[in-house]
Image (cartoon, rainbow, N blue to C red; front, side, top):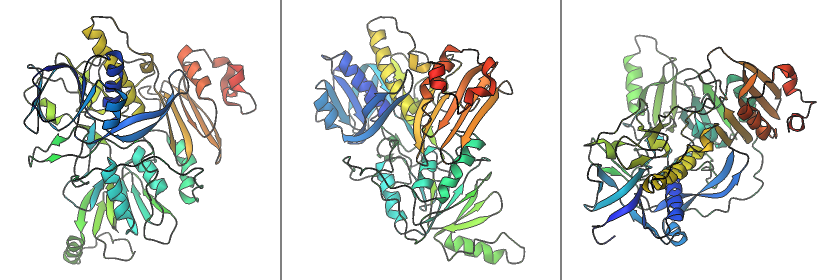
Length: 506
């Protein structure tokens, strides 16, 4: 934008990820004659496409990366400004941008997402996968790799380990089972055989247009949806917003090795130290007088070696850090009085308001600090980013118009649908008995290579469920959790495969 913005914009949204774009689109629809300003560091934004309301609370959609010009064409009252936030002056209702310009607002929504929580920032051999550019860098490195190490146990790690072919994978998880964030050890055991079998052929080709950005920062450095000022160097990382749930589609995940797929999991351990090849050889030479854990016997030397807390050492071509994200609050805290949660997110109330007047937040950057429904918890997932972005726009509108608004029904029950290891996965309510202590019981039904069904009961009432495979039980279980029907009379027959429970509780 050529000229400095002198006027006060009624609505400004920071962040081009799902939360920011959902908020912007909702505001643009509610206020068609007001200019809505979307501030983003990247020329690409994330848009929800193919949205489908599966049930009352379950929703499925694709995430498509698009040039920011598309949202401006769709909503003529949206103005996209590509720039990085340098500082927020909340009392003055003003944003200072990196290019020296100022942006004034009446209502501001921060949707700046999160930045990768890399276990080390001091090695060029450690790659964090966060956005399109880093995913493409991963593809480039993988094409020449025979062995990689993946650190982490969340969604990206699960997808990556399953998708990679032609490369040996050492998977380091700090938990007793894979996928600890999403399911229990039983579900993990159901999925593990999939790592040793051939992946099924894709039913359809991936036809979505892919866009890239120019002049990207190195992909192993932190990134964020609005850009983040590096506190150490003063430089700014201008990578795009987080990857979509189908980020690996259209990316060739093939290494340089003849082996189709070989995954070895190291449980209950973390990275103790990272060595270059030279450092590792020197350390081995110095330790010759005292026995040390031997490196793996594979061919080497490798560009990088990692020593684990269980005493084992592995050499590899590069390391993928998939250990989650940290809320990207850095550009906003200095000089302001934001209440910050223990997980570093901006605290928001049930109107998505932060502690600073007229400043709202949604998505990964915020932490829900209202009294939640007994069946809901915040998890920084795509579904919640969309819901929070949409709801924050409605709250901004209601507060501006001085109208009452109640917490949306989507916050009544945690509900998430995704895919892991080529299985449909549905998570409902307290699916992992979160916060229930010993006050619960589990019912499980498992059919090898077909389905895994787990329900969580408390005092005879269903409070959570995990559904893996094509079970067609999600809507029935959703209703049972919401209406809190006493299921005690049914006992274990509740999961009897010979009973059509869907019709029974219709």
